[in-house]
Length: 242
Image: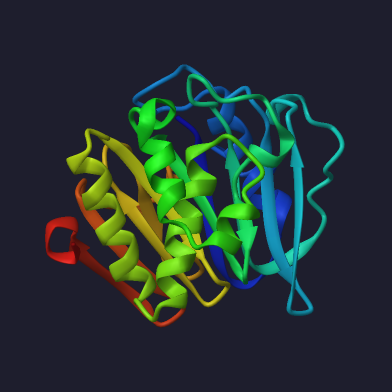
């Protein structure tokens, strides 16, 4: 249901991890090893990165392995990328390709909100603040969940607590695959809930699958909330986080 990764560390060429690594994101998009739903991720991809304290992004509906437009030469110390497998019922829209960007955050969802087009999505939209709800532009679950999280952040809830509570709520409503990935360029917050997730330090990379065969990659246990920055990693059971 998508492959994604987030990076924090010394500036690195984006193409190094997206294109050049032995099991790069582009290779994962076409030949995932651990994806539990779907054989590939053909519905486009996107990458967002910080440069001079400004968020930039590139997005397309072209399959990642066929994209010859983005050259990957940009260097960044904080960035996120994802290859998309569109949830059933969603449109092929370039704006729907994660990561989505808003208010200094980036968000990706590897998974899906069950019954999103059968009432659950409407319930989530109704909980968004009016201004944020008016800014929704796609038909995808990731955008609505991101809006709910941003409202919680604005209300003073910690990002980790807000994400843990949202995952618990969606699971109670029947969702089983909810691997979220969030970053504000200073930390990475992620959930392993129904799909694979790995982390490597020095530099910090959180990814759906290892980008190479180095034994420094650690698998994040299912039902885990991960909080990571340049100083270290903390993991918490999703039940405790909720």
